[in-house]
Amino acid sequence: MAAKTELLGVVVSDRMQKSVVVSIERKVPHPVYGKIQKRTSRFIAHNENDEAKKGDRVAIVETRPMSARKRWTVTRVIERAAQV
Image 1 (cartoon, helix red, strand yellow):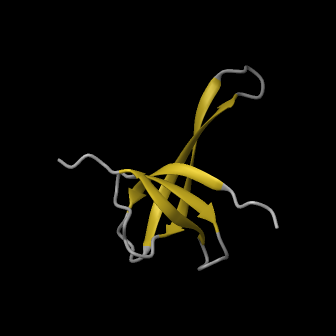
Image 2 (cartoon, rainbow, N blue to C red):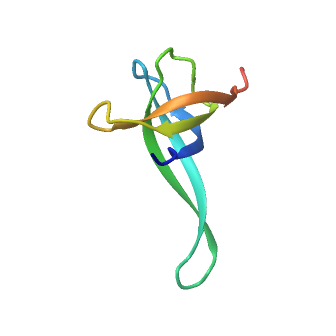
Image 3 (cartoon, rainbow, N blue to C red):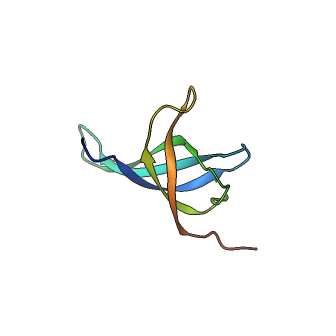
């Protein structure tokens, strides 16, 4: 069995029950000009105990399909968001 992909990202929304939206940012070169560009992907991730909150850095891992759009699970919170 292949190792599951783990990604690091920031929680941008935690309004759903047991789910969060995680934004993953990566840098890719432009195919013609070579300039480095930022690209963002948003994933819906399962958050069983509502441990991840908005602004937290989290690690997510691939899992079985849990709903129509949810195929990732939060494995751990790397860094908590600063409380204001």
